[in-house]
Length: 115
Image 1 (cartoon, rainbow, N blue to C red):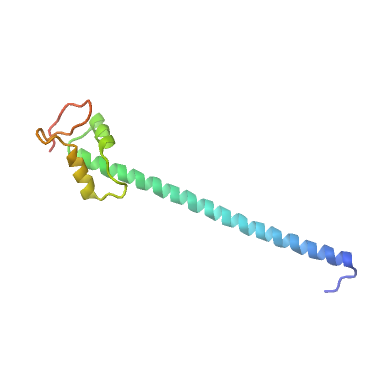
Image 2: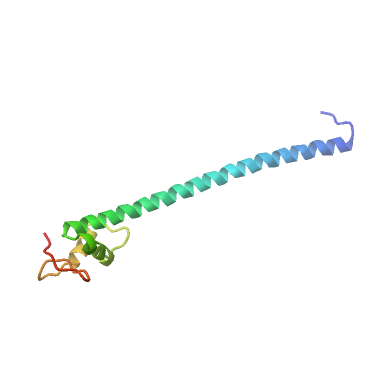
């Protein structure tokens, strides 16, 4: 391609640069959108894992006879790492039981026999 003068050549180069910038900006925009979607998906996954952990803990406590406010109290007292398996959860829940009455020891609750 032959351009008649220097100004036309400069204008042609500038148009090419602007087009490349627009494409790059579009590419960067898509990358940013992808990163945002991945971050949101990761946040949803972490929230789902937290709900699953809470449900597992409550299920074990219900199995020991906790319900209502006692269940909430026992869940608050249960201290285990987030990555604890079922055996660790069960052991920690068993520690909440009073060995003499085999009831869950939760603040402000009436002792009830554990199954």
